[in-house]
Image 1 (cartoon, rainbow, N blue to C red):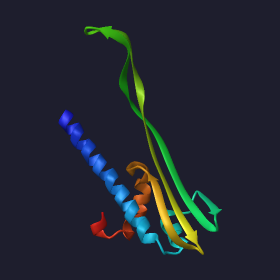
Image 2 (cartoon, rainbow, N blue to C red):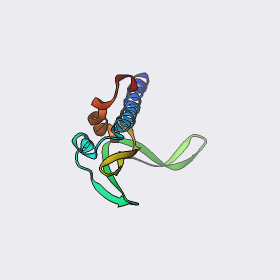
Image 3 (cartoon, one colour):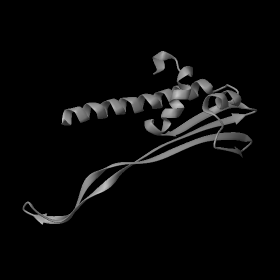
Amino acid sequence: MKNYLMIVATFLLIGCSNNMKVVDAGLMQLRGAPVSQAFDILGYPDREEIIAGRKIYTWDRREVNTSGSAPVSVGAGTYGANVGLGFYAPVITVQSCRIRLITQNEQIIETDYLGDGGGCAPYAERLRPLVPEDAE
């Protein structure tokens, strides 16, 4: 069972890592493109602001999931004796992604992102058609 869990965890990490490569390569492909192309691919941004004459568009995604429970024990013991309280607590995972496009005259001049593979997965799927196969 332990080996099975390690294999599943490895595939999940590979998938998440691949999502970040796709986001990185996809955003690179958008540099120099009109911002309307990004809207067609990513949808409308969550926020826009102007800083130093440049317009910055931001897409933010954050998801908090609670699944199952894990055993937790609180207490102290000496020489193998465990005295304390044992209970189960929910397993909480947070996935997030933030993509920013910096534009000037409606052209994308710079991109950046911050997040994890799970949080960026929806954006990776939208950007995947822009990415050359050898970049994945």
